[in-house]
View 1 (tube, rainbow, N blue to C red):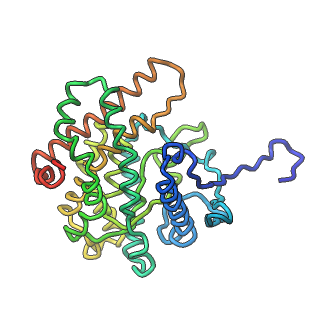
View 2: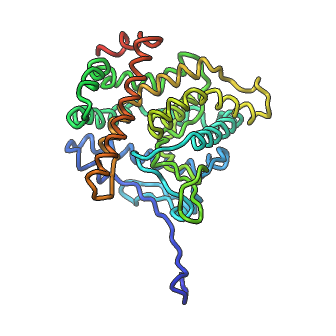
View 3: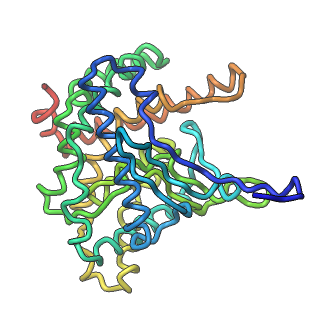
Length: 350
């Protein structure tokens, strides 16, 4: 912008999809081509979201000025959007959310789900199916972090027991395909469109005049892997990835009931329009939660970026993350030793 005032500065964001970081880890040309194709498809999905679905979903998102499809051999794609750095902040993987923030996210999910349930299903149904090959490639990338975590963790005895119980299951790609994409069909749970990647890096929290994070959501970003699935997919990912073990356990006492309450309010109190029961939502939640043991472990290894060059601080962050993973694993084992014991027989020995 032309301006004579040096303080008159305009900032904006240009999101350009790329494969550079991932390609460094891949030497197979055939896999490189396949992954590039998947990146193009996910960018196209995000463009479609901002152009067509965002106004219907009506959740906090960045203002998008223009999108450009990625056409291999012709031009790169991009999404031109507002700069949110003055409106909000994201939290790091080792940081915590509170119960009020959790309730606010659940309200947004219920509002979005009501809008999806009310819209003409021809607009979306069958168009945002989960990508089994993409999920398998992703699991292949994350599984090696299990062994890295085993070496790095401090609570060796506790985790040795845990991995004896969970190791086969959390390495089994069939389990993830079922838990994230199929279980809702088996229990006849009406599907909706889910964000698919609701972790702390994709939730921008509003800030006050001092730059301190508040409880309100300023924006939910990165919609490129949205897909058709259970309404619990986002909730289970959000609670397992974003909350400490203690806060997650507190939230799980009320989260599903609160979601149903919010969804009923969205339908103006008409519970007959809510196509879900608590029992079926809980079953779906449990499956998705256990799927996120691997994602938690990989998050501890891959997503942690501590800027402060202080050994004690880094050590404290790791201790906090390790405890978060430990508590999730303990809760997963309780489910697998109890009401979900058949899961071991189905997927645990492969």
